[in-house]
Image 1 (tube, rainbow, N blue to C red):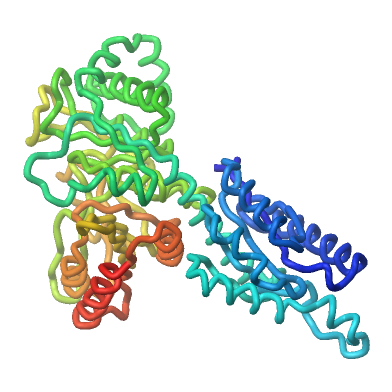
Image 2 (image 1 turned 45 degrees about the horizontal axis):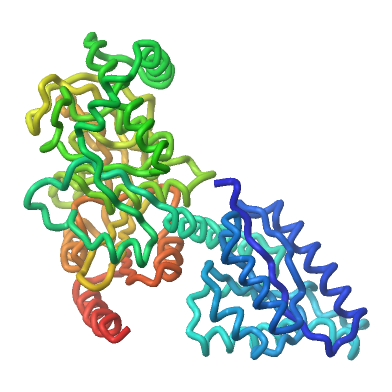
Length: 488
């Protein structure tokens, strides 16, 4: 993700004379350079824009530069907002309005009309903010002193959400076979998704994957096995099963990389010509940043890759997840998340083990190898993107992952246990009321606020289930949103 950068576009006008404009440009360049050392991505000072044409030109450049993930604007002086109309109306990248000023304090002895003419951010930012509101621009407004840690943290969080938009716009998903039969929530309008989110979701035959698997050499498998043994504890004597997973991983990765895909999905109902469902193979691919969705769930596959990109620089912990079963003892209510095989080892509290067990579902000829581990404790979110027919809804729930309260020695899969907000049963009622899927992305790195920003940038509905949510309030919120989105 490090190729991405953000552009700093500063507003002013010719009224103040060349000396003031030179000072504005110098200060703006200084701010961008200083902030670049504090933010997760480089901030590049581009221009002190003084005319409609300068603003329009820099926006055109922004739109067509693949390295630019968004713009941050600021008005050091007064920048008449009509000159921003053409540029903002054509902007296709995420947009943050930083309402700040170069100086922290009002200097009691120095303040005069020259100082006032130079330092008019309070004036300029409000004029600039009006035109964005008038144009109904999706934007993030961050106010505060630019050298404060709180402001820099908020800017960094917004940048990561904007990078999620850039990744989304270029997302290609390799859909092996079709969805699991008769499952509703894994379906969706691929044309609508490509129009709104940029995703290209297309199908590749499982037979094509088998052909690629057959071309994998023993030397390639040996090299992959060395990576496995260095990364994980081998807790099985069935080395052939592990080598078969290596063969699957190498083939899947080759196919995805050849097509520029960052995510893939498959289903245990369509393993034509394969001995095992990719378990360890899928898990290790996710550990490298690829997205995955089980049962043909291409939406969660893409979202997994996007959250992994947004969380880069954290502990890498964003992963495909599924609510499996509940612990409903009063006062000890927990959700147990897992999947048949495919949970990313970025969630692991310790070193994962490679184990081989029978999988009593699907078309497996032999027992698949997989990573088994307990998930780490910590605050996190679970995210679900659903197709509501005519629009997309992003549902986010706050959770707190805990060390599993029991060892579950006979459960041969990776597992994560958590408390759902506001509590398990209320949270379940709210999740079901909102239409949340059984597949999610669980993330320790990405916040609900960042997902709200991402949804706003992508112009889709956002629902957040928090410690304060009640079913009654949520029903009212969903009713109002349903009306509002139908009017859009």
